Length: 367
Image 1: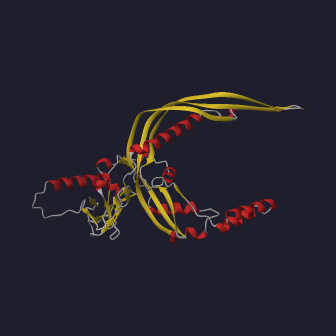
Image 2: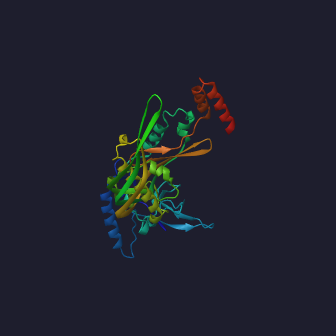
Image 3: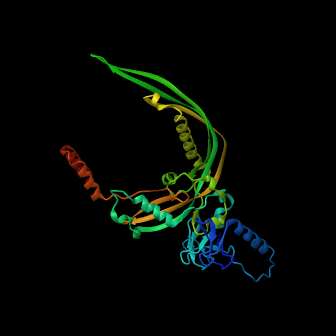
């Protein structure tokens, strides 16, 4: 399998996609080209290359490729077109960087044929923004170890294009709820409770556009859903050049395997939307009885969406954080300083001897 680089027409350096300017940028000569200009340039270059005869002694730096090789142990590696170094890649890797010369490389066959995305949402935020978002996420966390936020703890910040299946449809259906109104009163002898029961029914039609389902096994589904939403109005037709300078992975969870999760998300959202039309003040209790939903005009698109992954090493453990590369929304798991936890807990319960006793018993139970 070949790998691909995007070369600067001016100096031959490696072009990378700049999230700030939304253009291809050359770190060597500071040249910038918008995507349309580069596509026209590539079109002319490729067209010219096709007309070359067998006596062509010239070379061009545009779209240079390397080939994959197989080691003795059977593992697959790719040869870097720039330095010839070996690039180890997973089965799902579509874009990465050479560990020796740091050149961005793309594996075209990983994003072609059935693996070619329909859409891509380009990165809008850079690594610096991801780092600042991580620091902001850690602020005002009373139980967070003070040394956790140190820059030295950040092991890696990686921009990754993650594969997603985007489901769209027209949903129409009915939802029934059991509603209760409870009235209480009392006289000198008795207390009375009156419960009135109601069947609350709602019908509606809702359009769903681009409901995302993570198409990668290695990415945490809960994290991917937590950093939503993406503004799909900023999505563009897929072009390999957007991958330059970032990592990218192809899907290993198929469209059919993702359909169940999409249907679950659509149904839950449909129920929530219709439930909002019920005045909660009218009922003391409102419980879902049953529902029926039908989806028509369904379509599925394959897209790559931008995610920054921040890895922090603390006490021999890796903590992972994910940030939406378009909006900056970040999620992750933070460690808890046990000393601060017990200090705050004991301070809170200090006024109650019974509570302190219960807390001590709880500590003994888990020690």
